[in-house]
Length: 535
Length: 45
Image 1 (cartoon, chains in turn green, red):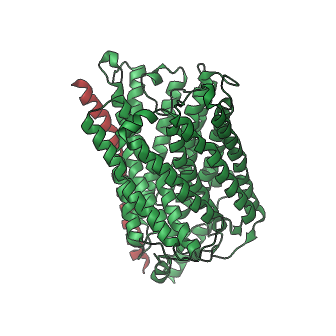
Image 2 (cartoon, one colour):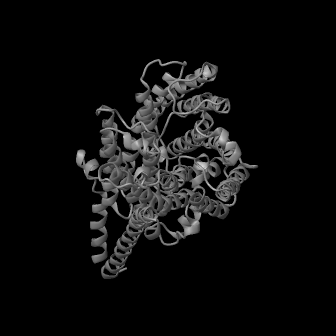
Image 3 (tube, chains in turn red, green):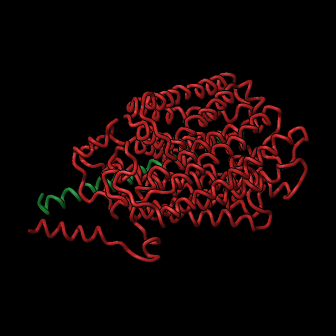
């Protein structure tokens, strides 16, 4: 009787859902916080995208067209900061918040109040960063890498940049701690580490990377701050400091950061391809070890960003070979995804389309990465549009397509309704065509010698720049479909059952659609876990 | 499961959660300070 009473009280407590603004401002529920992260990321995606449109508009023709060079440089710098820290990272954290408890059989994240705090730091950080556009001297314009001594010449925007980066870092670290603690402590009984879905695995490894490298960025920008305001000379050559040391510290953060942006996409693609191939994932354990290997290698390749800065031959060889080594675990992953599809019963719904585009287009980014890893070739490619093409292939059809795939995969579960599949397929094809029109010509521009981060260029680069800009405008417009599809789904989608996709496996599909406010108030049975873990 | 046993389990779980969160926060702080100290040591040479 006493037990029953306790259960009822607990049950009522779990069903309690605050209403109005309090539900969001004081949110501790993982789904509410996940939704806020995703909305924030989508907003920042369009803010950063608008900056990209300014860049492509200016580069449509040679000569100065619309903006002055200082503002152009601010746009490139702010576009990068907004997209990396404001769009992609919060989108992954939003997906993690939504899915990790549901996939592990947990009722919520382990530290709900910390979760609230991690999210609410972000709007303040980005308000501060974006308001630097309106201070004397304009927004930061020295590149997202913040290299001294250039960055130290920023005007009033400099302390705003440093404080904003600190806040973004704090938010990421707190979010990562929450993910690690949740995965390590709140798994349902029977959910062993090697039964966890790949999305959870990739997020666990991403969280370890975040905890290791975000404080390094924080340390670097703190030293910039003291150099600027307190007379230290960490990176000032005139006082005995070393500007190149900043580059080493920055890229010790910066390269793992690339994997922070892409590893969760590996997890999502590893969920989607088996579902729409109606086959278990090929080589589950190999996939886990490949992700762990990529994460480890990401710590020992940082100086490949600095070949032209100058380093001993042994250093060049080490960083070239260690970078090339990353192709091995990445190749394992691409092979396993392909093998999963082999002789599968394939269908091509929007999540699968985005996952397949990811597979092809991310590989293009990977291959150009291998070209950049070759030291003598890098001397030619460094600071050209070839580099811009490379990292945009990794981050747009890589990270962004991974996020799109994830949202289109789980949106029916979140909303309890199916979205307009036809419109989402249009979104896919427009995005895929235009992303290639946008970024592929940039390889040619870079190989022909067009430098990056310039508002004007020699006339021989005109044609491909025009093509690239047309691709940019098309890609930007196509993205407007995305919030409309989500809004239409939430408002008037077709109701679905627990399982949105016939071939889907995993604990999240055992819950109702939409799922209850608290996911697993009673842990799932071992049989349910075993049924979900069919890899 | 009795209420007392459930509470004991819950207390142990909360302790584990708190301790591991503190551990990871300390590791993060270690990386932050570690790299600043590294820069100081290298700069003083």
